[in-house]
Length: 344
Image (tube, rainbow, N blue to C red; front, side, top):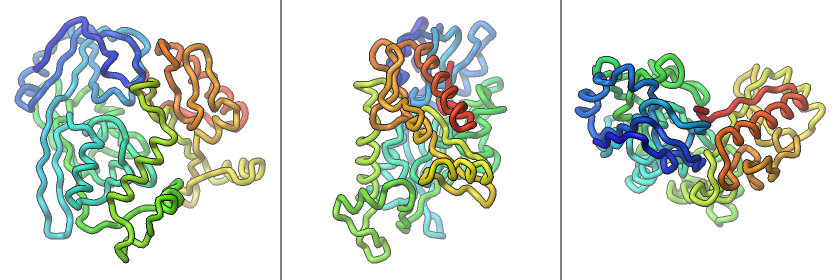
C-alpha cells in the first residue's frame, strides 16, 4: 500500500495538468481496501476515486484523499454455453485485457482496443467505441463499500448502465471502491464492422471481411481499430488530452430531421424509432473549432472531439475552451453538448 501526503497527480492524469492532492492512497488488495477505507475520517474528505486518469480534468489542487487501485491479476473460466468469464483486477490496464483476450481466442472486446484507462474505470464510465460498450461485456462488479468496508457484488443490471453512465457515476459516486470486474467473452468470433470507418480501414489493409469464411481474424480487427485511433487521436505522452472530451448527444428524431434538412449528409446513428445520435465532433468541426487554439488549450487538428493541452495549460483554461465550444454548438444547432470527462 502507498500512503503519501501532498502528492503530485501530474502522472495520474492524461491531460498532464500539474496538481496535488492532500493524501494519496494506492491499494493493492481487497484486504487492504477492507481494512483501510472504513478508517478514513472527516479530515480525509473529500474523496476522489482515480483510475488511469484518462477521463479526468483537474482544475485545482485536490483538497482531500485520492484513492487509486493497484489490484492486479486475471482469472478465466469457460462456461457450458461457449463463453469465457474473465475476472480482472481493477488496476489492470484496459487495453492489456483486450490484448490478452484476443490472444487467447476470447472475443467481444476487439472494438474497444486502445481505449485508455484501467479496468475499474470501464465499469464506472461504461466505456465504448465503434458500436460496442463495456456494458455489453460486464457480468458483475465487485466493490468495497468505503464507509463500512463491506464487500459487495453487483450484477450488470444493478449498475444501471447507459451511454457513458452507471450508478458509480451517479448515486453510488464515491461510495464504492471497485476491486474486480468480470467480463463475459465469446469463444466464437462475431465481428462488428458497421460503425465508423472499420470496413474502409480493413480494405486498406487488404483484409477480407467475411469472418464466417475465415477471412478476418480478431487480431486483424484489433489492429484496424488501433490504427484508426492512432491516426486521429493524439498520444497523451506528447500532447495532453483525455480522448473524447464530449459525449455524442442523443436527440429526438424530429430534431434530427429538422437539422438534416439544413445539413444534408449530416452523420447520425439510429438509437431507436424515436432517437438519433449526432456526433459532437462533427458539430464542433462545423463551428470552425477543429485545429483552433484558445491560449494554451486547443482542439485537435485531426479529431474535433478531442481537446488538448498545447503545453502548460491549466484545467481552467481547458474548461474555458470547453465552454466556448458548447456555446457555439448550442447557438448553431440548438443542442447542448456535455463533457464526458470528470471535471474536478
